[in-house]
Image: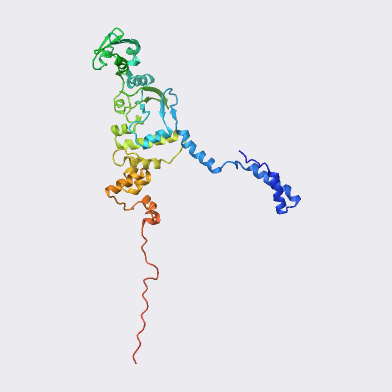
Amino acid sequence: MFMKLPPNIDEELKLYFEKNKIAKDKQDAIRAKVLDLYRSTTYDPEEPIGIVAAQSLSEPATQMTMRTYHFAGTAGIQVTLGLPRMLEIFDARKEPRTPTMNVYLKPGFNIDQVKEAAEKIKEVKLKDVVLSTTLDLTDMWIKCKIDMDKVRKLGIDPVKVAKAIKIKNTRSEFEGDTLTVTAKKSDVSNLRKLKYTIMETHLSGIKGITQVVVTKEGDEWMINTLGSNLKKVYAVDGVDPSRTTSNNIFEVLDVLGVEAAREAIVKQAQYTMEEQGLGIDVRYIMLLADLMTLSGGIKAIGRYGISGQKSSVLVRASFEETKKHFTGAAIRGESDPLLGTVENIIMNQVAPIGTGAFDLVGKIPGSDKKPAKKAKKKSK
């Protein structure tokens, strides 16, 4: 956008010429120079340049990143990215909003073997193989018509379908293609709740993994999942445990240890930033990951984690919940030795960094010279 010409530019120039007593033969040259200056300027003087510059940096980094992102080529799977994902990582949330895994298989697997492994991983519930349901409010039973072709395709033993339903005060029977569940107690209000519980019965696969999608990465096939369970996925035949990863950092900690959890924090934070087109030096992320895993577990960077557990009262109070920290410190009789940077800045003292990190000790040139002694008068 070019700079707009003021509507009264001719009047302003006329006043300028009269005030400065500029000759008429020079006025045209000055006018042309002023108009060229306006046309060559690529901003609008009516807009504050500072706000425009701030928006160009802050808006993409916050507003444009607060969205979910579809995996390329995997319809239906969404993962939380952007600012919400960064909060999950550095607030050390126990469960991510959308837990996912990238499951790699050992070399040599073809597409059919990969699909077979994906079927073993995906959780199958009773509702996935039911065609229709019927409720009888008089005799208190629920009948489910089962898709037997789908049951056989998924490799589920039909005999185990009825045994899989383990609900108190119910009796299950499977005959032909019909599953009948009878409630022992006559409670009409709970019959629909019972139906929901039956539909959620686990039949096969790994619990919590609700969706699997086979994709190709480079020259090999891999499995993207919605839901995460590293320990059980590692036990599936053909899975390569050295490359299979999860975005659930606490699960990585439990299964693989603190070093793997630290690496997961770095990789997940880096991936989230890069997906939004934002570049950041990996050393900053590594520093945060080191702080979070220093104790052998995972601590959040926040009021209930690293920032809220510092030894200095002033540092804790400067972050959040100032009144709470000062009141608690007064009750416990805490003192602050003012050894860090933040607390000294608060107290308007020299911070122990840079030239303030040491005391200068040295000799001033010429200060060690002793005054010359006066010569004694010779006695006559």
